[in-house]
Length: 224
Image 1 (tube, rainbow, N blue to C red):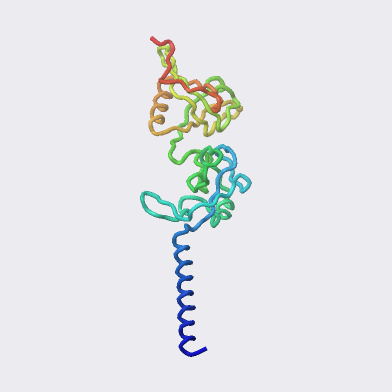
Image 2 (cartoon, rainbow, N blue to C red):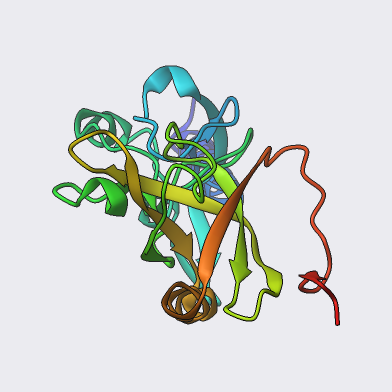
């Protein structure tokens, strides 16, 4: 092969190499990078310690858009990179979760927090009200139970003030009798509940959260 032909072959080979390299680079640029996130296999109640058996892996883009800006998926979701570290802390759920919901750091309790803090939604307010084993439905009222709260004022009128409220914790005296319950509320419900506890007698009505049909408005008896 002549010197000239060798030069042409080298140029063709180099051009082919550059073309292949450019194609690979373009493919890598256009193909989204993937990472692994985890979603819950089933419904789990707040306070449940998170374990790997509760999760299933899902592949997704390694970048997400938050407030109009690109950011790493790991900044909001628990990914394959930090799952083991998260599970080793033994954190529990701060709120109820459902099947298919992704595991995020915001769902986990804060290490060193109280049991109530660990069990409540981070945006909620915990309010404690006095009750007995009669007004509180049962001396066996449990954390996580859902109740309606009825308010009976001095004049004898009873109002369904709150529906489907979640019990965060209960307290009993030395004899084992129920004395108070801590309720998870939002900012509006908190002030209403404190006022009701101060000016009326509260009665709980235990409900099944999955089957209870919520009523519109604030039913009152007698209604006049």
